[in-house]
Length: 372
Image 1 (tube, rainbow, N blue to C red):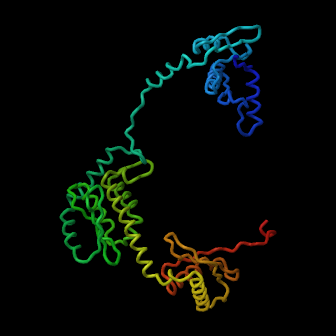
Image 2: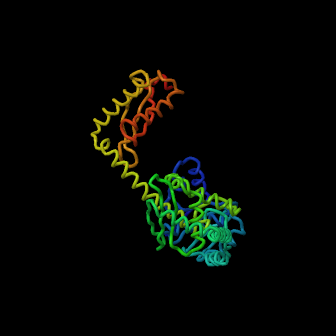
């Protein structure tokens, strides 16, 4: 028995649900769940056809008013669909599909897609630059190598006195980062024969020599790229990323990423070692010590005894109990609070632990009427 439908009725139901149903505004009938009506009857019929096919309907019959469908659509339907029979009555067309299968137009549609030519764009992600700009930067590094290499060799000899170093392997090449005991940066060095890469390292060493190693870790990548772009008068649209500027910048950037992880772990170990007394204390004892030091701070600064309220101590990202949360009473003016917090933090660092940080946690007004 054929599955029978009235086109105007299912269209009316769909439009009603579209307005009055929040979710699943299609038809309640599962067989029509994938159908999406269209003002063009041929497109609407195609959608209906596939919805029935996907829901296991093998054949169907549908009545549609002549006012809804045009004679042009009827001719198009006959051309597109297999196993179709159309009977014309006084006011309606009865369209009958004896066997649902793929319609005739599918192959033509696939052919049209295959014939489309896709344009190739020389595009580097993160910018609208091209490889020509990378070559320009590469030549810039080679010139630096040629004019500074002898100076670079002399500097390497001078550095052999007192320094700390870390060797890093990247792409099967060994690089060495050197820095002084006072944590100032000396150089990046390597035995590579790549002149443009050596030129990039010479430039990096010149820009950041003598700067604090943590400042170099945090800021060198962006500053290095900005300097290169300005010096070579290279304009790049969009976001500038290390690999946009060529392998030399990319390698230097990655060396610092590896060194950054190593150095931060080393610093954390030193902090834990120096602050082992504070870290090993029980939670209650830490709180007692902290409260005593806060009271001492208030006394030395002639501030009312209960002006600063200790709330609690929380662990930082490294898992150490270093975050002290406080509240300040209303007797301290708002403009004086930031300076007071900074002074307290400095006092706690000096008298308890150099790794402590103070956080201001304003107390909420519990009066519901005032909060309206």
